[in-house]
Image (tube, rainbow, N blue to C red; front, side):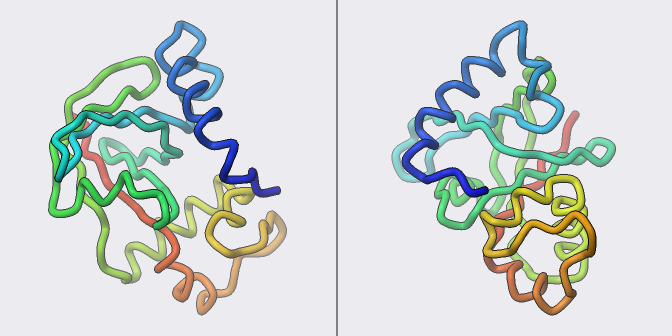
Length: 149
């Protein structure tokens, strides 16, 4: 089920409070806070984002309509609050659609099948989405990589 867009400001506010609290463990295994500067405004922004961790690499997933990730194009210094720890990192947006991005997106859908609806797919726990569907939809997902220290 897709949550209506109008609810996200309230959800994001609640997630920010929760992820900064001692109760962060309720969601911090799959949601983190990323703090970055706006490219044009120079203002500091913080947003909660779904993530997958693979060693020291953390991948953040968002729809292209969410504009926050555009501030990280070309690489940017960011701060992430992951599992209750605040870390300074470097973030890069994966701009190319290739086999690596396809592998990352498949792993994301396997872990969070309910998120498929935010990228134009039907959730599927039983069978993987066809490769051609995923290749086409890769334009409908913004993936950012953060390397932890």
